[in-house]
Length: 250
Image (cartoon, rainbow, N blue to C red):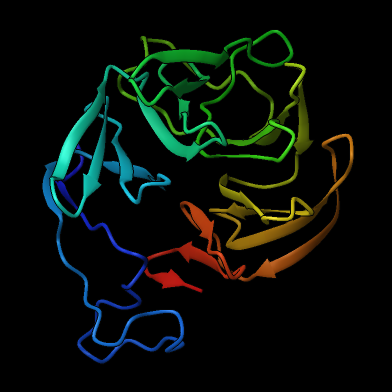
């Protein structure tokens, strides 16, 4: 079991663990803002997402739980037995979408806690590697990364059956297509608010790539966006991209 890690819920204030004053654009972070520990005792925290009401949801994957934090109540359990949810994202109806790699599925959880399987059919006749992070476009389609991190809760003999670690697009029709095949370990993923571009972090390739989203969901015009990979990434209302790679990069 990994060491217990603390949950730090913040609007990405932490840029360095060193003692010196962090450097960041003054317009992005409130003056005097400091990291505060919101909770601890979790096995491995992942997948933070912010709801419309300001609550922050995150997962404890080995504990198979999703938690919610708000300023008044602190941290409470939102959902147990959630398929080992990892990366999460809220859809336009307020449901929490999640990559759940216990059975290599994409799920959604309603505001009332009902768990619904969105996709569980694998690709090419075999199971996916382990969906990790996702982003929903304006059409309702879902892009998700599918690296391979072996889990001790999988059945004995479980192994990678996909030939590569890829990125997929689940069309609104339910059809699943591969859209990226040449990254080493695709992990964090997000799209721009206008729906024109997709950004994908290659965790081991130490790069974040930018793609143009085509009308059919396929991708084109691959470019290097940042010389850093990331175990998750996000975008703010101004279009700034936040990467997590030992520190937070904007």
